[in-house]
Length: 373
Image (tube, rainbow, N blue to C red; front, side, top):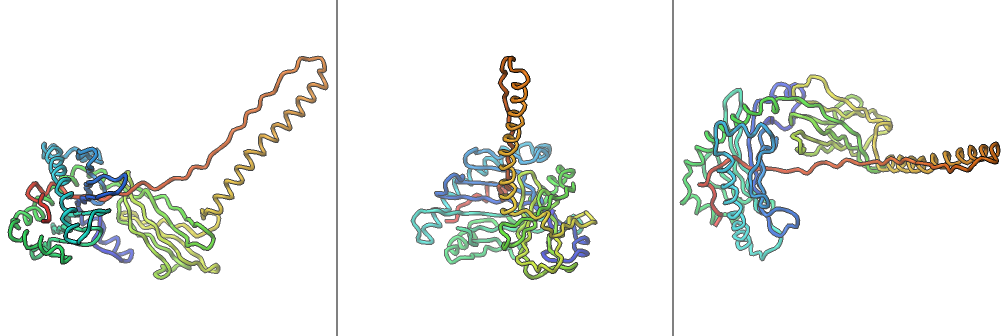
């Protein structure tokens, strides 16, 4: 779940939690990017991935078990939206070719993206929506859902703006963003209620690449998305000298976020504080060398383990030799029996963050599958 507020204190955070729900999709077409699908579509509800399509599988599939419940209300859901994705796959390829011409480009690596969706306030009933097109990561064209008009965000988009104003039925978009999309959002919220209303506490780690590098407080595996991560110095929240990253989705439907402390005063007391929606108690991790993980410390630990891996077998070997010598001395006429030694080694495995993906909306229907020409 997501709020509409950026920076707010703890009281405001607890007051406005979990009332504004969202559903959005992101379509991404690309050209000449190795090992990346030419077309990718992903959908989210409250930031949780619910559906995925790519040009290799050519099939829209659910990302959560409960998403399949939608077929009880809409039996044709997966077949219809798969067909729409297939059509969009071809249209977006054309869009890149058209954009190449508009920007006087000749091939190369390019992307064309569309992000659209809607939001619903479960307390006031207010609905909202958005639709944005981007080319090579920059705004290209959008739909103003207040005045219901197309906005050209680049001079090269003016041709498309004028054509769509003449050719596309704006009433269709009004109906979709104010009625159809919110209704699908409500169905998903109902079907995934247990999953979407759960609370999962994070794993917090303090990380540092080098002794002079910023200290990173990393929280991962938490749910819901609404969370605040910040640093305190001597009990006071820091507003300067701290860089907070965007909250990202994990592959399992949880989230991760990080906050970097750029410089620390050795005489001060620092704490990393995590606040999660619906959880009254803060999670606090003091900055302490004993819990701080760094490349230097990990490398030292690896050297220690390597030394142990060598030293232990050597010690065993020495003991074995002594025992064998004693046996030979005592039983000079006994038949010699060889001693076989077995050494075990352990391996330190680092965990990598899962790839992130972003996503697209629920069937805006075939009528919105139009090129930008």
